[in-house]
Image (cartoon, rainbow, N blue to C red):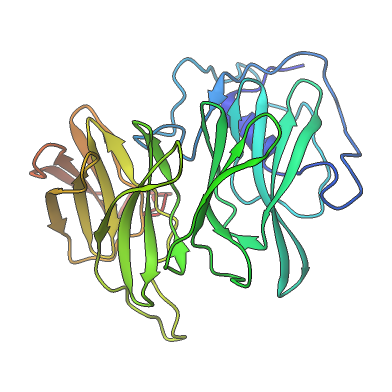
Length: 314
């Protein structure tokens, strides 16, 4: 049996849902292998706070990859799970009707392919990859109560049994993917007070708002929907968090939310920035731009229009 690398295993796990969610349980396991997974961990969207998508030390297979095992589920989870200590944490939605949707967080043991627990966490949600931090799993983009399709909450749950630890309720309509760094979760809110966006930092211990920075008013498309609701994730390094917002990139201090620098590109942005080696990388239309992470000075830009397979989305 070929050992799967991190990316292939995440693809195989993308459809995992929890036993007991629909009453049918986890059935139809196929090609179950006794060997343990080689995954060391994948704690959040894009792997780390710098959005590198790279798990150092994980090796690609030296032969053709194959599916080791799989689980049939009523609905697919559109985002990969977070993985820690041999457990995959999956956010998924079960739909009874257009207006009757239930969001679940499930913990899947990778060695036994069984569900440790499954927790109903809201009546709708954006199903982003959750964040694993110490003893908790944090989910950004949850709806509850009467707020169907209003995915504006953040909630933390115990890794041991799924018990809710805290919940942050916002005055927005939507939220972006969250990024964890330095004991805080950073994300963007869209539709604050019905129109504006905001950049937010939460304390992971109790969900309290560390700081909030107001952003511009998002545009509306021809259907009257807010157009700045892309799931772009902020990137964090060395005490600075980098957000994209409509046509600009902003660098904000993780300590107090003060602005470090900004650059207005004049082109709609719906991508997650990537940071590394003192630079911030961003795709702008058909160009890749690199900034000095300290002061925002553009270092270089490259036109990739003629490169086949390039996309400006994450």
